[in-house]
Image 1 (cartoon, rainbow, N blue to C red):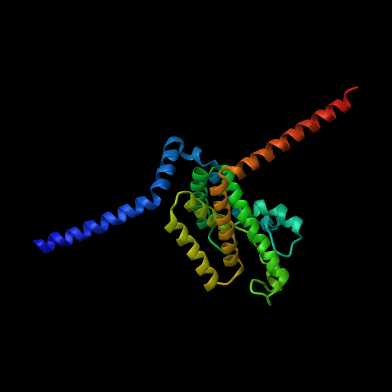
Image 2 (cartoon, helix red, strand yellow; image 1 turned 180 degrees about the vertical axis):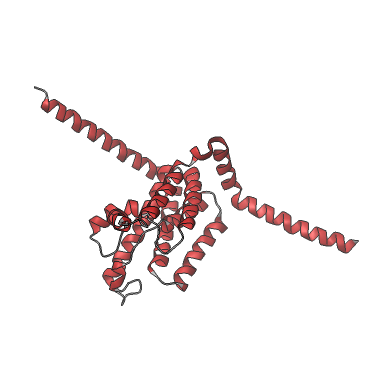
Length: 259
Protein backbone atom coordinates (compact mmCIF):
# COMPACT_ATOMS: atom_id res chain seq x y z
CA UNK A 1 0.00 0.00 0.00
CA UNK A 2 2.78 2.37 0.81
CA UNK A 3 4.37 1.75 -2.57
CA UNK A 4 1.08 2.39 -4.34
CA UNK A 5 0.48 5.51 -2.32
CA UNK A 6 4.01 6.65 -2.89
CA UNK A 7 3.69 6.02 -6.63
CA UNK A 8 0.44 7.94 -6.70
CA UNK A 9 2.08 10.74 -4.77
CA UNK A 10 4.90 10.94 -7.30
CA UNK A 11 2.43 11.13 -10.15
CA UNK A 12 0.43 13.81 -8.38
CA UNK A 13 3.61 15.71 -7.62
CA UNK A 14 4.72 15.65 -11.24
CA UNK A 15 1.24 16.63 -12.42
CA UNK A 16 1.09 19.54 -10.00
CA UNK A 17 4.53 20.68 -11.08
CA UNK A 18 3.49 20.59 -14.75
CA UNK A 19 0.32 22.55 -14.00
CA UNK A 20 2.21 25.16 -11.96
CA UNK A 21 4.82 25.51 -14.70
CA UNK A 22 2.16 25.90 -17.39
CA UNK A 23 0.31 28.52 -15.36
CA UNK A 24 3.53 30.42 -14.66
CA UNK A 25 4.50 30.32 -18.35
CA UNK A 26 1.16 30.89 -20.09
CA UNK A 27 -1.25 31.99 -17.38
CA UNK A 28 -1.08 35.72 -18.16
CA UNK A 29 -1.21 35.10 -21.90
CA UNK A 30 -4.13 32.66 -21.69
CA UNK A 31 -6.12 34.89 -19.36
CA UNK A 32 -5.66 37.98 -21.54
CA UNK A 33 -6.58 36.21 -24.78
CA UNK A 34 -9.52 34.31 -23.28
CA UNK A 35 -11.05 37.44 -21.75
CA UNK A 36 -10.94 39.37 -25.03
CA UNK A 37 -12.15 36.48 -27.20
CA UNK A 38 -15.05 35.67 -24.87
CA UNK A 39 -16.19 39.29 -24.91
CA UNK A 40 -15.69 40.11 -28.58
CA UNK A 41 -15.17 36.79 -30.39
CA UNK A 42 -13.84 37.37 -33.93
CA UNK A 43 -14.27 41.13 -33.54
CA UNK A 44 -11.27 40.94 -31.18
CA UNK A 45 -8.87 40.11 -34.00
CA UNK A 46 -9.81 42.04 -37.18
CA UNK A 47 -6.14 42.51 -38.11
CA UNK A 48 -5.43 38.77 -37.87
CA UNK A 49 -8.58 37.94 -39.83
CA UNK A 50 -7.69 40.46 -42.55
CA UNK A 51 -4.11 39.19 -42.81
CA UNK A 52 -5.34 35.60 -43.09
CA UNK A 53 -7.81 36.52 -45.83
CA UNK A 54 -5.09 38.39 -47.74
CA UNK A 55 -2.83 35.33 -47.67
CA UNK A 56 -5.68 33.14 -48.89
CA UNK A 57 -6.48 35.64 -51.64
CA UNK A 58 -2.89 35.84 -52.89
CA UNK A 59 -2.59 32.06 -52.72
CA UNK A 60 -5.64 31.65 -54.96
CA UNK A 61 -4.58 34.43 -57.32
CA UNK A 62 -1.07 33.15 -57.93
CA UNK A 63 -2.41 29.73 -58.99
CA UNK A 64 -4.79 31.21 -61.57
CA UNK A 65 -3.75 31.77 -65.20
CA UNK A 66 -1.79 35.01 -65.28
CA UNK A 67 -2.20 35.38 -61.54
CA UNK A 68 1.41 34.64 -60.65
CA UNK A 69 2.56 37.49 -62.90
CA UNK A 70 0.12 39.90 -61.21
CA UNK A 71 1.13 38.81 -57.70
CA UNK A 72 4.81 39.12 -58.64
CA UNK A 73 4.31 42.69 -59.79
CA UNK A 74 2.51 43.85 -56.65
CA UNK A 75 3.93 41.79 -53.81
CA UNK A 76 7.02 39.74 -54.66
CA UNK A 77 10.36 41.03 -53.39
CA UNK A 78 13.79 39.90 -54.57
CA UNK A 79 17.18 41.14 -53.44
CA UNK A 80 18.03 42.07 -57.02
CA UNK A 81 15.16 44.55 -57.36
CA UNK A 82 15.76 48.29 -57.03
CA UNK A 83 15.49 49.37 -53.41
CA UNK A 84 12.56 51.74 -53.92
CA UNK A 85 10.56 49.03 -55.67
CA UNK A 86 11.35 46.54 -52.90
CA UNK A 87 10.20 49.03 -50.26
CA UNK A 88 6.93 49.59 -52.13
CA UNK A 89 6.26 45.86 -52.39
CA UNK A 90 7.35 44.90 -48.86
CA UNK A 91 3.98 45.64 -47.14
CA UNK A 92 2.17 43.20 -49.46
CA UNK A 93 5.05 40.72 -49.65
CA UNK A 94 4.26 39.74 -46.07
CA UNK A 95 0.96 38.24 -47.28
CA UNK A 96 2.27 36.41 -50.37
CA UNK A 97 2.78 32.74 -49.39
CA UNK A 98 5.53 30.55 -50.81
CA UNK A 99 4.56 28.61 -53.92
CA UNK A 100 6.13 25.34 -52.75
CA UNK A 101 4.68 25.22 -49.21
CA UNK A 102 1.12 24.33 -48.11
CA UNK A 103 -0.84 27.52 -47.65
CA UNK A 104 -2.89 26.11 -44.76
CA UNK A 105 0.13 26.17 -42.51
CA UNK A 106 0.69 29.85 -43.22
CA UNK A 107 -3.01 30.61 -42.68
CA UNK A 108 -3.06 28.85 -39.31
CA UNK A 109 0.19 30.46 -38.15
CA UNK A 110 -0.87 33.96 -39.13
CA UNK A 111 -4.36 33.75 -37.66
CA UNK A 112 -3.10 32.31 -34.37
CA UNK A 113 0.06 34.39 -33.84
CA UNK A 114 -1.28 37.64 -35.32
CA UNK A 115 -4.48 37.20 -33.32
CA UNK A 116 -2.65 36.68 -30.03
CA UNK A 117 -0.31 39.59 -30.80
CA UNK A 118 -3.21 41.86 -31.72
CA UNK A 119 -4.82 41.18 -28.34
CA UNK A 120 -1.66 41.34 -26.23
CA UNK A 121 0.30 44.07 -28.03
CA UNK A 122 -2.39 46.09 -29.78
CA UNK A 123 -2.80 46.61 -33.52
CA UNK A 124 -0.25 49.40 -33.97
CA UNK A 125 2.57 47.58 -32.24
CA UNK A 126 1.65 44.32 -33.99
CA UNK A 127 1.94 46.02 -37.38
CA UNK A 128 5.15 47.77 -36.36
CA UNK A 129 6.81 44.51 -35.31
CA UNK A 130 5.56 42.57 -38.35
CA UNK A 131 6.69 45.12 -40.93
CA UNK A 132 9.91 46.19 -39.21
CA UNK A 133 11.13 42.59 -38.90
CA UNK A 134 10.05 41.69 -42.44
CA UNK A 135 11.87 44.75 -43.75
CA UNK A 136 14.96 43.90 -41.69
CA UNK A 137 15.10 40.47 -43.34
CA UNK A 138 14.64 41.97 -46.80
CA UNK A 139 17.46 44.48 -46.26
CA UNK A 140 19.68 41.75 -44.83
CA UNK A 141 19.25 39.74 -48.04
CA UNK A 142 20.22 42.76 -50.15
CA UNK A 143 23.32 43.44 -48.08
CA UNK A 144 24.29 39.76 -48.17
CA UNK A 145 24.13 39.69 -51.97
CA UNK A 146 26.02 42.98 -52.13
CA UNK A 147 28.98 41.84 -50.02
CA UNK A 148 29.19 38.44 -51.71
CA UNK A 149 29.80 34.86 -50.56
CA UNK A 150 33.39 35.49 -49.46
CA UNK A 151 32.02 37.14 -46.29
CA UNK A 152 30.46 35.27 -43.36
CA UNK A 153 26.93 36.53 -43.94
CA UNK A 154 27.25 37.03 -47.68
CA UNK A 155 25.25 35.28 -50.38
CA UNK A 156 26.09 34.19 -53.93
CA UNK A 157 24.72 36.34 -56.75
CA UNK A 158 21.94 33.93 -57.67
CA UNK A 159 20.22 34.67 -54.34
CA UNK A 160 19.35 38.09 -55.79
CA UNK A 161 16.72 36.32 -57.92
CA UNK A 162 15.21 34.22 -55.11
CA UNK A 163 11.62 35.06 -54.27
CA UNK A 164 11.63 36.58 -50.77
CA UNK A 165 8.03 36.66 -49.53
CA UNK A 166 5.82 35.22 -46.83
CA UNK A 167 4.73 35.87 -43.25
CA UNK A 168 7.18 33.55 -41.49
CA UNK A 169 9.60 36.27 -40.34
CA UNK A 170 6.72 38.34 -38.97
CA UNK A 171 5.27 35.29 -37.19
CA UNK A 172 8.63 34.53 -35.52
CA UNK A 173 9.07 38.17 -34.48
CA UNK A 174 5.57 38.52 -33.05
CA UNK A 175 5.91 35.26 -31.10
CA UNK A 176 9.09 36.57 -29.47
CA UNK A 177 7.63 39.98 -28.59
CA UNK A 178 4.45 38.43 -27.17
CA UNK A 179 6.54 36.01 -25.09
CA UNK A 180 8.61 38.95 -23.83
CA UNK A 181 5.51 40.98 -22.94
CA UNK A 182 3.84 38.08 -21.10
CA UNK A 183 7.09 36.96 -19.44
CA UNK A 184 6.81 33.55 -21.11
CA UNK A 185 10.60 33.19 -21.03
CA UNK A 186 10.79 29.48 -21.85
CA UNK A 187 8.48 29.91 -24.84
CA UNK A 188 10.52 32.81 -26.17
CA UNK A 189 13.75 30.89 -25.64
CA UNK A 190 12.30 27.85 -27.44
CA UNK A 191 11.33 29.98 -30.46
CA UNK A 192 14.78 31.60 -30.54
CA UNK A 193 16.55 28.25 -30.23
CA UNK A 194 14.43 26.74 -32.99
CA UNK A 195 15.32 29.59 -35.36
CA UNK A 196 19.04 29.33 -34.60
CA UNK A 197 18.99 25.55 -35.10
CA UNK A 198 17.13 26.03 -38.38
CA UNK A 199 19.74 28.52 -39.58
CA UNK A 200 22.57 26.16 -38.64
CA UNK A 201 21.08 22.98 -40.10
CA UNK A 202 19.51 24.65 -43.15
CA UNK A 203 21.78 27.60 -43.96
CA UNK A 204 19.53 29.24 -46.53
CA UNK A 205 18.11 32.72 -47.00
CA UNK A 206 14.87 32.04 -45.11
CA UNK A 207 16.65 30.61 -42.07
CA UNK A 208 19.03 33.55 -41.76
CA UNK A 209 16.19 36.03 -42.28
CA UNK A 210 14.35 34.39 -39.39
CA UNK A 211 17.37 34.99 -37.15
CA UNK A 212 17.50 38.62 -38.28
CA UNK A 213 13.77 38.98 -37.54
CA UNK A 214 14.39 37.41 -34.15
CA UNK A 215 17.13 39.92 -33.28
CA UNK A 216 15.04 42.84 -34.53
CA UNK A 217 12.08 41.66 -32.48
CA UNK A 218 14.25 41.41 -29.36
CA UNK A 219 15.40 45.01 -29.85
CA UNK A 220 11.82 46.23 -30.32
CA UNK A 221 10.63 44.31 -27.26
CA UNK A 222 13.44 45.77 -25.16
CA UNK A 223 12.76 49.32 -26.39
CA UNK A 224 9.03 48.96 -25.66
CA UNK A 225 9.90 47.70 -22.20
CA UNK A 226 12.12 50.75 -21.58
CA UNK A 227 10.09 53.45 -23.31
CA UNK A 228 6.59 52.04 -22.83
CA UNK A 229 4.20 52.93 -25.63
CA UNK A 230 6.58 55.50 -27.10
CA UNK A 231 6.71 53.98 -30.59
CA UNK A 232 2.95 53.47 -30.94
CA UNK A 233 2.50 57.10 -29.90
CA UNK A 234 5.09 58.14 -32.49
CA UNK A 235 3.18 56.25 -35.18
CA UNK A 236 -0.09 57.82 -34.05
CA UNK A 237 1.55 61.25 -34.13
CA UNK A 238 2.89 60.69 -37.63
CA UNK A 239 -0.56 59.64 -38.80
CA UNK A 240 -2.18 62.67 -37.17
CA UNK A 241 0.44 65.02 -38.68
CA UNK A 242 -0.15 63.52 -42.13
CA UNK A 243 -3.91 64.02 -41.75
CA UNK A 244 -3.45 67.65 -40.62
CA UNK A 245 -1.09 68.34 -43.53
CA UNK A 246 -3.53 66.81 -46.01
CA UNK A 247 -6.42 68.86 -44.58
CA UNK A 248 -4.32 72.05 -44.72
CA UNK A 249 -3.44 71.30 -48.34
CA UNK A 250 -7.10 70.85 -49.25
CA UNK A 251 -8.02 74.14 -47.58
CA UNK A 252 -5.19 75.95 -49.33
CA UNK A 253 -6.32 74.63 -52.72
CA UNK A 254 -9.93 75.52 -51.96
CA UNK A 255 -8.90 79.07 -50.96
CA UNK A 256 -6.81 79.46 -54.14
CA UNK A 257 -9.77 78.41 -56.30
CA UNK A 258 -12.18 80.76 -54.53
CA UNK A 259 -12.63 83.94 -56.63
